[in-house]
Length: 125
Image 1 (cartoon, rainbow, N blue to C red):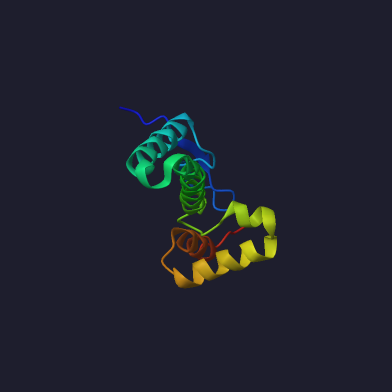
Image 2: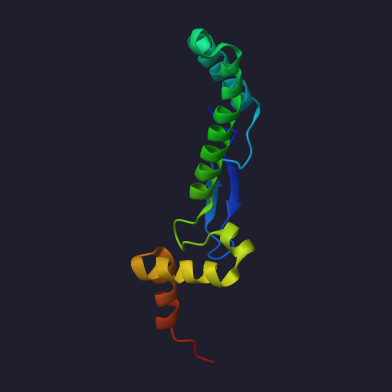
């Protein structure tokens, strides 16, 4: 069965085809999970907190939002070259430094191998 949540795209730096599994925003299923978790927590802690237990919806909602954003940030960074478009939008110099550090730490990266083979080929005119 095909997973429809995958989004096909290319890395902006190395043009590697990629599939993103996560999105930045919560979907309908996530909101349903938040409501069900809040209802279960309220039911379990009602004798202690009374109706104050309903305020747990904000904590659960924030937890879902943070975890979704962290998973998206982890997923969007390219595994081949280390390019992170979210950092590129914030600060180009930081994004460039991150790519350089990634390539220094991963000398067996396919991006470096492709560059080495291009440099070894002589073009004659």
